[in-house]
Image 1 (tube, rainbow, N blue to C red):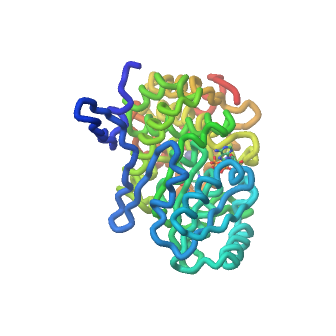
Image 2 (image 1 turned 60 degrees about the horizontal axis):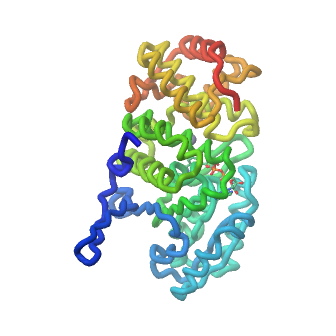
Image 3 (image 1 turned 180 degrees about the vertical axis):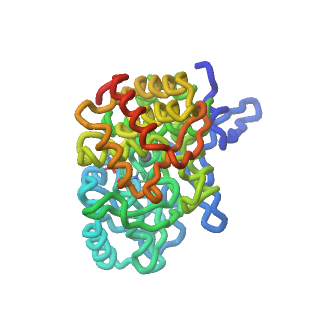
Length: 393
Ligand SMILES: NC(=O)c1ccc[n+]([C@@H]2O[C@H](COP(=O)([O-])OP(=O)(O)OC[C@H]3O[C@@H](n4cnc5c(N)ncnc54)[C@H](O)[C@@H]3O)[C@@H](O)[C@H]2O)c1
Ligand SMILES: [Zn+2]
């Protein structure tokens, strides 16, 4: 391994345990803080963490653990046992898995379930699941009795490196994704990388797209490391995963800490997402996993940057190579017209006043938000993307 992950994963100090004076063991520290003043909270990345979740629970009157049936069967026991050992009463509530349940109907059902379980203002909600569960559970916590505290225990790579960090919660409406929501910061984010061992390979790769994105937008050294470690990551090597998660969270936490409510800097997290969202919406959210759509979108963003004279060709090439090494799709879908993508982008809530805003890379590790990108430049880039080919999903 050419580069030292521990050095790269800034935010780690290295904890020294002295054993009988003669031996010094250095273990990587695995906690970082999202710095939001009085609402600051820790993100902890450690294997075997589920059993110790009670440490971050405070002294709640009750706890409701929210999960999906299959995930609860896999991972709820250590959490429930840990809480019981501390004498904390906990009810398990499950909702079916899937984006189609991320809606207000599920939230209404959850309010009833929380009332039935006797949760009051001093109670705590714990969400155990992927981004869907974190979003719907977080929104329920944000609004139940005008807001109760919650802890995120994300179990997909995407949720661990992205959805669980930043305090965005919400649900979909029939007319679009994430149209209703609230900012509600969790009390803690507890990430046990061991949970990724049961995740499907496709979901894992989808999360890797966001990991690669962090390297592109703000950390060249991390980008290089991820490329070097790709095989270990795809093999789910616990060490490689832990460090990739920790560094990704550190980068997102830094961005969120500077721009909690998405006024400016936070927009850089949307690199590759403008075209990605358009592809997801045009294919009814069925063809692509989110990370797959943004993988294609990141290549488009490189080509749009080239059209604007901002992104060097080699940078687009390096982006596409990394994504292909992660076995993510990079080819523009043959059956979707560039026109349809343009129109879908103009409908996206992230376009202000119909103008096209893109996050574009001037090199790996450096991006900027470019407003007023012309439709012609985007069209030319998407046409080139289509001709260029690439890997298929
Ligand atoms: N709030 C935010 O800032 C933010 C950011 C990015 C994405 N999101 C949201 O996240 C959602 C996507 O999240 P996702 O990709 O995690 O999908 P998901 O929550 O639907 O999870 C994917 C599937 O994996 C299963 N699963 C989860 N963990 C597992 C495990 N450890 N082992 C086996 N199976 C497991 C789930 O039950 C589900 O079937 C979208 O709704 C998106 O809008 C939110
Ligand atoms: Zn994303």
